[in-house]
Amino acid sequence: MAAKEERELERREREYRGGRGSVDVRRRTVILVDDGLATGSSMRVAAMALKKKQPAQIVAAMPVGSPETCAEFESVVDKVVCAVTPEPFWAVGQWYRDFSQTSVEEVRDLLNRASSLTASGAA
Image (cartoon, rainbow, N blue to C red; front, side):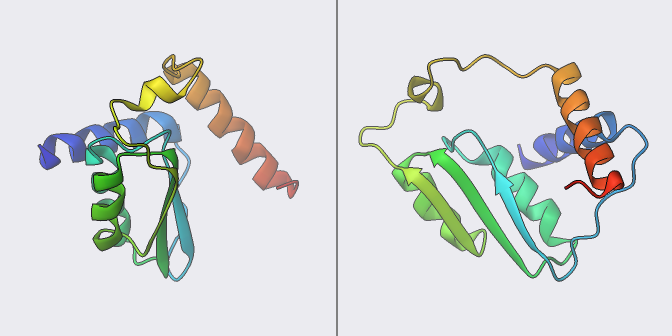
């Protein structure tokens, strides 16, 4: 399962990066953000891939998550910020009015806009 998730992460990274180089995170604090933590499989793969790049610290942040998964993540990253850990936890989507998927085009557009802000010094 982790190998499949890692391949998907790498595919998305290539697709979203659009020829831009990766950010050097060595000795920096990196905040991994997710819309919520249910099983944590995607976030776990992202954290493992990120650890290879030697950041100073990895913080996993999400607005809602399974209490068990948020607790388990304390051994995966340096810090976990999980705003709400409801009991019982059924699904991430139940905590959103609109839980529609973000399209590839939307992600590319946001990343391009962020990249141009950073390049212009506005960020």
